Image 1 (cartoon, helix red, strand yellow):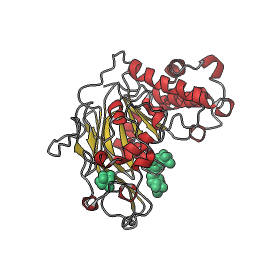
Image 2 (tube, rainbow, N blue to C red):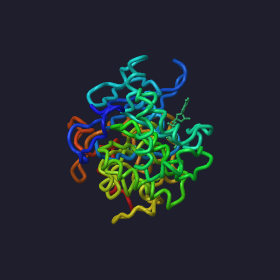
Image 3 (cartoon, helix red, strand yellow):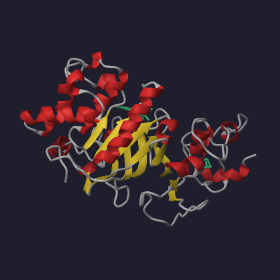
Length: 355
Ligand SMILES: Nc1ncnc2c1ncn2[C@@H]1O[C@H](COP(=O)(O)OP(=O)(O)OP(=O)(O)O)[C@@H](O)[C@H]1O
Ligand code: SF4
Ligand SMILES: [Mg+2]
């Protein structure tokens, strides 16, 4: 097992085999018992070493909450967070703190400027997780320089600067350097490019792509922008109001979305190239439709053009691997990197209603 104090892994990417991260039935609520709001509802998700998994969803869908629960910053209400065979959701107190200190799972926060202490130098910021992991002081400087170099920053030029003396792109790289300095096996990065201009966005996305290969890292990239994920992610998971409505290889999901919400996302992202382009207007519910009762059945129903009486039952998430198939008797929604799943009663039929 690789830890913050081991030597750097020199392994080739391996995107097959058992998932490194295997989340099953994860639910999270905020607020006090009795008055709490459920923000994640029965999420199943898997990530493999060397793979980039994109998580997409509109604001408030629960993306950050999913990341925070996975790294142990929010306690799940239910579910299992399997990491290399260990259930992180079951860790408490000292055991959880000890696991987090190893730095095997790292997280970069949504707002890079606010997540970096403005008083500290880059060297201190990047070295902090090593101090927490117990790496001796005399070995930290070399590790910090190595991490900065790996993300394309010059340690000699930038190590003594503070976050306010960096550009947005450099700050984001510092966040990534701090995350990889412990040689993690899983990196979760929350909206890493949303505050960057187009050229910096591409540089940071390419950096993540390179790091997963060089370090055999599993990387989860959270974004509300599908086009940012399209170039680098192997698979994508679509979150809508705390539920994963669709999951699968990103090229297949973009080309042939099975959930009406995913179809709306792809139709609304003109920069994402697809052969069979749908238009957002083809997918939106008409204004004169009777209002959908609050909190009943499928969460997407109030916005779904294809909602029918059966949608008053919440749809189960089922495997949908073959073209146009939905195999509700198939176990293991997250098994295999090519697995597809969808939560929609009309996954195989809604296209027939398109005009
Ligand atoms: N600490 C908290 N206490 C109570 N509610 C919270 C808390 N953090 C988030 N929420 C609520 O949980 C829901 C999901 O929030 P979350 O930050 O996970 O969404 P998100 O998908 O990351 O959104 P964004 O794209 O805006 O970052 C939102 O309704 C939010 O208001
Ligand atoms: S289950 Fe029904 S309401 Fe929900 S996305 Fe599918 S068709 Fe639309
Ligand atoms: Mg967020």
